[in-house]
Length: 135
Image (cartoon, rainbow, N blue to C red; front, side, top):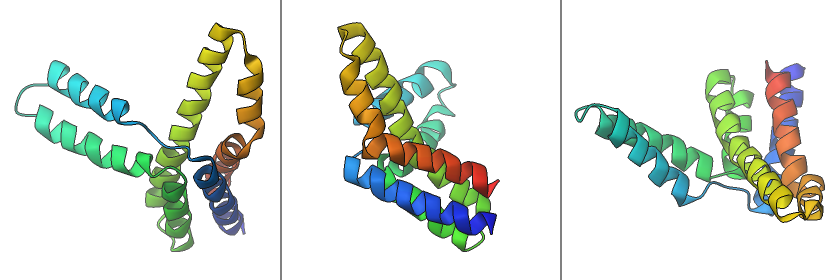
């Protein structure tokens, strides 16, 4: 019963994230590549960059990644579902935190509240609840 509820929450959350266009930007991919090349040995850096690229592709799907996670949960693939939901919702959560910083810095917290109460904020909240329900 809990898995079924998690699937439902993730599906609704994923659709809301899709409606809000919440996804990761390419600057995050570039940052990961630079960090891998700066801090890892030369023979390991390309492999780490490739792994980061795969994770970035999943994260850049945003709500679609969350929906893929819900389908994985439905099929019983719990770890895969957790990964997809975490990455898909994580981009929305990262956007929330960045908007909070920008809103506080500019003194316009109203934009943050609109985002929080809009489809993206509700989608992230539902995805967090879904991950909690799925265990």
